[in-house]
Image (cartoon, rainbow over all chains, first blue to last red; front, top):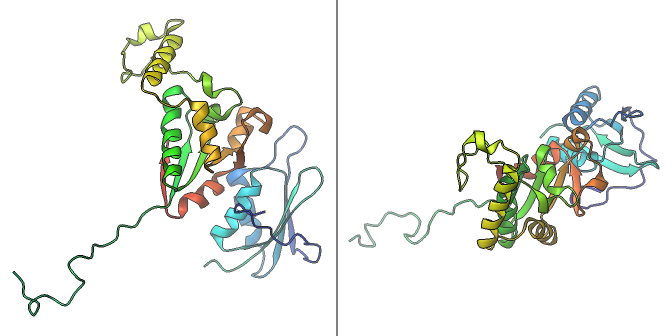
Length: 99
Length: 174
């Protein structure tokens, strides 16, 4: 779901990511959030070519709003959002030219 | 008086240039005392009443306002607050009981002014569709979980706030 409530393609199984970014908390430490999260996505996407897809696995609740917002603001395309059991969110982001 | 032949061929005299109007109100709330909590909530409900889209981003001490059961118990300290209605020397304001007294006095004045109670303002805001976003990073910092906060909240970070505030919004910080 985007921040506006639209559902993005739930079936992400066909999409092959070129790279995976894992931003998960471990044990007592809480997950990566806010600008640490978005800067990590930015850095990971810089390594990809236009059209390639990045899979981001994140367990921070604010990612639900922040990642779609980041994509909208930077012009990268959020292809799919799914949730694993245990609350980990999966975002598939396609790198695009910044408009 | 200008005759029709002399009048310049421009826009008719009655047309005024339109002032661009913001359709959104973005509030960044980082304080949580009795005096600082009301301004954003009153503004938010006023904006919702004129059908603006509103987002309130509660961060740092702003989380105090949206803690479960806390809104009715916020306090105001008379220390270092020379603008208080009844100014008190700081050395007196430090004494035990003075914060309680200042809080009671402020609450009394608000009651006299028919200022809607903060709990009701929060409920009203949610009902009117004001987006109330709790800052996840601040929650992690203060050791708060979703269960510790009131219902009706979203959980976001700076990017969520920036996306909202970037588009045609009045942005204010409290």
